[in-house]
Structures are given as structure tokens and as C-alpha cells.
Length: 422
Image (cartoon, rainbow, N blue to C red; front, side, top):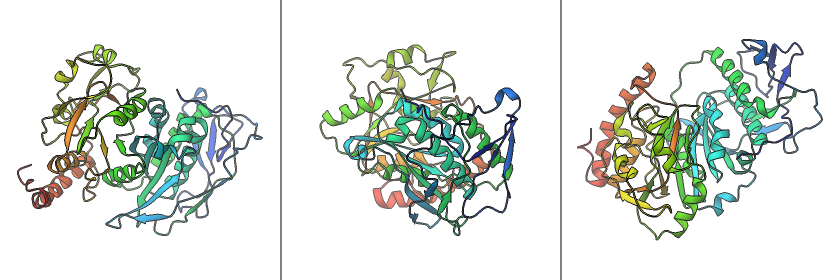
């Protein structure tokens, strides 16, 4: 379980004594042209007010009011600025001492899952976070500072890397000042993020594609000191205690060249209590139960090759082991534990569609085998009950499909196969 700090978090907020409004008053060296001044956020009713204290004596010991972005590098196409290790874990050495490191990606709106993730995964974690503009960055830094202070596992074991569009932020100052402190308690973190998202929604910025593949590569690179990485989405929770069990399994298993270890994926509601064992999971999986196979409705080929019927029937030792090899099919988007020689995600594919499945296809063509772990699982927070997508996602998928059709030539030239996949 995570340990929350008993200290209050001194955030860049000006709170009104009427308890119906609070004002975001974050300052930086360069203010955006819009908005120009404090932004008021009103909650629906007085019961939703942020609790706060006037005790301002407990200033964070490790926070001096200034946040400096790490130096950036550009991606291969000069589309994005990448700030590696923008916020470094207090126990940064754990990345070199652990056999496996979790890599994941997020934007500000999905950071709400990180406290729960820190309960499920207590090992080293590399998170690549996407932001669009300076206002995004200021809110992002404030919120992550709160989480790193209030949740011990996040502060100790989570490294954060920032990715942002290169052109939109070409003249952006690299130093953000946080001052004018008010007081917020650790229990306020969800409400605080909700208010930040209201602020961003009011900006009505143009839609910017979420560069999943760039982010995944950045997060994976952040795990380079660990021999294995386990790449997930931030709202997919590993089985409780999986880091310790994977660490032991990988340390004691004989070397397996070009082996990728598949963690079977399920999905459930956002509020369902997650099981701790495979036995409990199976008892709660099925029609009109709490859980089902991940994307079973939205895109059945997503996990089909895992062969869940076979996984459910497995007998043998309770100790984690590689049970059987997947019969690969194109469209497979499994989550796996792998070594750093597996092909990276192709950054010519930007946004949604043909991201994970193209990477697993290339890994398969490169000779990697997908081995299903016997007694491990992960669960996505939220049920996807249709294959409906927002119009912008459908547009990105159509575009990326044509990118993939051209990319098949690269696969054909490199591996002798590729053109047959559609």
C-alpha cells in the first residue's frame, strides 16, 4: 500500500475564505497571452469545496519554489522536444538494481491513475508525459509535485519524462517559477486535477495528436538500466505484487533469447476492487461479472492470440513461469515484459491506430517469441462496450492505416515478409 505524507502540500493556489471559489495563480517567467490573470473555478455545490488549512509553516523540505526543465533533445523527425528525467525518483538507483522496470505513458488528464498504479507496482517506474503548451506544463509540474510528496512510492520510484510539440514550444522558457503559495492537503489530489482540467478545457485549443509511439519509446528508454522493461498503459493495473514476482522469475529463469513474456490483460469497471490472485480473477470473470478479456468487445483480435481458454485451464506449479507460446496473428496488441533489443515503436505512426499491433508484428517478424506467463495478469480500469471512436480518432486511424501500408515495404526488405499483412 502507498504511504501518504502527513504534511500538507503547499501549492500555487490562492484560496478564498468563502470556500466557494479558489483561484489558480501559478506564475512563470513567461505568461501565456490567454488567459491573463488568475482563473476562477467554481464547484457545483459547497460540499465539493476543497478543504484547506491556514498552516503555512510546513514548507516542503525538498522544494525550493523553482522547477527547471532538464535539457531537451529532439526526436528523429524534429517534431517533439524530449525532456528526459524531468522529475527524478528519490531512489533513482533502484532502476539499476531491479531486473524489471515498468514503462508507461500519460497526459495530464490520465495522471489520476498514478496513485493507484503505485499501489499495484512498487518497483522502478518510467513515465513519459505529454503536454501541449506552457500552461499545461505549469499545471503538470504542480500536480506531479503534489503526488511525489504525498505518495511515497511515487516519490521514491517514479521517474517522469516530458514530451511536447517542438514548434509550439520553440520559444518557451525552460524555467517555471512556482510561488504565491496556498495550502492543499494530500486528500485533495483528485479534486485538484479535476479543476486543472476545467482550466485547460476552457482554453479551447486545437486538437493535437497524442504521440503514443514517441512516448512509449521515451518511457522504455527510461528503463534502460534494468535488463527488462514492462510497457503498459497508465490505466492498466498490474496484479498486486507483480514486480516482486517478475523480478524473482526473471532472475532465476534460464536465458531465453528473443523471448517476450506476455501478461494476460483484462478489463473491468473503474470502481471494481481488483483481485489479488488468478483464482479470484477467474471467479469474477465472465458474462454479468466484474471482469472480461481486455477489448473483448471493442477489438477482439487485440488479445485473442493469448488464448485465454488455455490460460484458464493451466495446471502446475503456482510459481510464475512461461506456460506456452502464442500462435501469433496480426492485430495482436499484448502487453509484455521484454529485453531492450526488441524493435522500438515506429515513430512515423502518430496518434491512435496501428501503434502497438505494428510493433508486435515487427517483433514477430524479427524472430521474437511471445510466451504467456502462467499466473500473472493486469486489468484495465474501464469497460469498452463498443467499437465506437471519436471522429478525430477515426481520422487518425485511417491516416495511420495508409502509413502502415507503405511501411510494409520496409518490413519486407528487412525481414523478407510484410506485404501480406493488411
